Image (cartoon, rainbow, N blue to C red; front, side, top):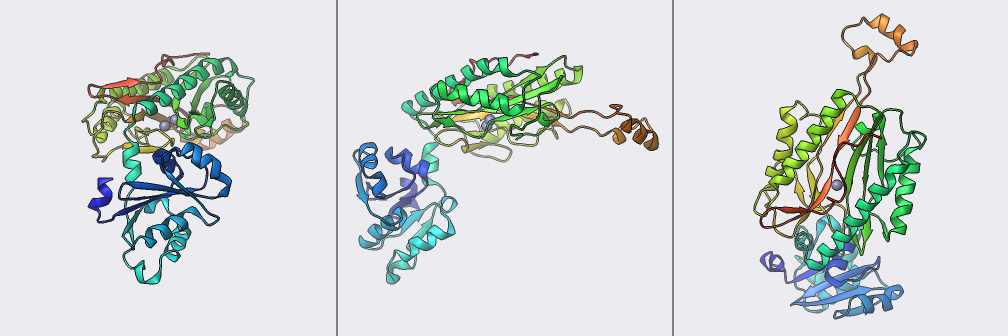
Length: 379
Ligand code: ZN
Ligand code: ZN
């Protein structure tokens, strides 16, 4: 909490659910923590009285009907109106207004000090218990990929594949999915965030599966891309370029390396084969209680990796289809005619993404999702 003192604030107000859980163990949907002089108090409402006392053992727990952030601010103000740090990225305008009202007028000036995610910073480094939970989540994820492959068939729809995966996830002990399961097939694999739709898997083409489970509150996140039917040479090449980019980036991961350099490691491989523009997102992100946390593995990120961070490495390449009229050799009028005859003169788009989760160590990293193969899979 040194960051709090450095910012001139003597108290810290924590209202973001995952931050509250991180500091206290409390998992209820309504809670706030006030930290002052090394003492933490958890505020919640009557619905959570028993749960809060059981989960947040060791913390003072206050139960009241009013919104917890109001209770917390009132308590802090009653102790003499010290400046109070809050996270502006996690506080709604409505909530800030409510908090201001809880401070007597004479203390309001300078009472609130915005501070960027002091708890989010702590959460980036996982302790042994957190790593164990993340390992369990990743193990469930890897098991699901192995089991779901038998449902990745031409007669299935994307939502059916997602449904099977999610059903098996619950049976395997997942509390929830980390995010909406992505099953993007055929041309839709060119969409980096193609949620599962009613589209049927194609006779031939890529299927991208990006999914994760929550185990003991902690998320997993992984992506595998498989191919239905025989691939073209181009598809095979793009897959292996993305795989190489991913492996080169993983090899660059080590405590003390800048996040931007890991991103560049992946990007440079794709640049060399002319796929730089086709890789339009960042290389990875932290994972923990939330599916997207710090650090960001992206261009321009000066932050250094540290041992104990858990991050993803997930380069991709997304090639938009070329409509028939864009194929250069043929005349436009003829093109229109060909298209109406159902001639496939254009090119279908496709995409590939490969994502692993890994634990940063002093000498390198450990891939937590390495139980799932990344070798070429043709079904
Ligand atoms: Zn993912
Ligand atoms: Zn991810």
